[in-house]
Image (cartoon, rainbow, N blue to C red; front, side, top):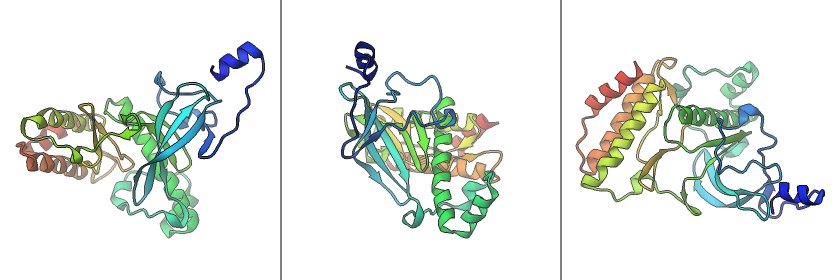
Length: 273
């Protein structure tokens, strides 16, 4: 029985408390700008009575770790989500190039100065900045038709998004696939459309490779977007787009599929203009 059903039938609020590795869903505390694009998907649990249960680590990285969480009202089926948590304080290690930040500006000048000086406050601001940037990038990409995980919400240094996988097993990266020869054709076609969709929306991924493309049930899904680059606002935007094309073409060529990176770059760039 759901929280709402129990209250409607009994007039008494059900009582339960978070257990080990649990917390109350952060959805209710999120502002409209901290939630994903409407319409919200049917599979997403939005009840304020839901609990987030941490099920394990999906991926660890230099700048952020990704955790698998289940969001559900006790006694009801819920949904699986991926929570990407950027490190803050003395435990995070950002190595982002300043080139990605061209065309972006922090509104709070005090925060911007703290980040530039590398103070503890600045490091904490930076981790939150990358979380907000990734959430905004996911939202922009999702609305533009780029196949990305649905961005559920952002809170502090954490981005919560759709979990891509089977059951509790994350989908493999394209780089981990065993596709060869003719099997690569469909995947390559999807990646080309990803590049085109990015360009049509006016930006480049900035770090696209077979390592941040997931392959789930034959569908290519793009992940790791905090560094997306605006093709107009960033003076190096076109260079980043070119690098994206060269990276993916190089991987497919290495697997036996012919790819003319320069010709493809010209086609993709035409989509932007």
